[in-house]
Image (cartoon, rainbow, N blue to C red; front, side, top):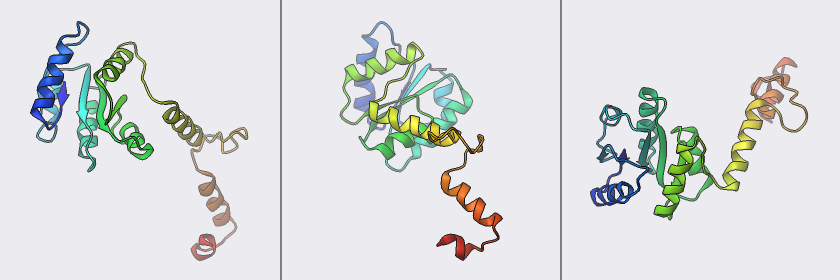
Length: 173
C-alpha cells in the first residue's frame, strides 16, 4: 500500500513497483485523508507511508500495526536527522525508513530486506538503537546493576536521594 499526499508520486511509484515481479501494489491513497481501515482492508504486507513533520503519520502507522500486526511500515521522505529517524522507529513503529534523498533502488533494497525478515538502517542509526536497548535493559557496560528495572542512571540517582529523605528542591540541585 502506498500512502502519500501527492497523487503523481503515488501513481508513479505504483507503476515502478508494479514492474518489479516481487511487489504488488494493493492500494495507493492520500496519507492525510486515509482511515487505517482503508489500508487494512487490503491486508498489505508493507505500507509505504509519507513522513510528515507534524507527526500525524505516526498515529496512522500505529493504527495500521494495531489492526494488522504483521504489516511492516516504511516511512518515506524522512529527513536525515537522528531524532526524526528514531521517532519513526519508536513513535510510529516503523520497520524501515527511506530518507528524503532516497532512490527507487534504495526502496527496492528495503523491500527485499523486509521480505527476508530483515531491516535496513545506517550504522549510525544501528548504534543509536543498540544504545537505546542497552539503556532500557539497564546494561551500561557495568554489568547491569539496576537488575532490569529499565531506569536511567539519573532516575536511579533520584530514587537514592528520595530514600535519603531529600526534598524536591534538594534533589533538583
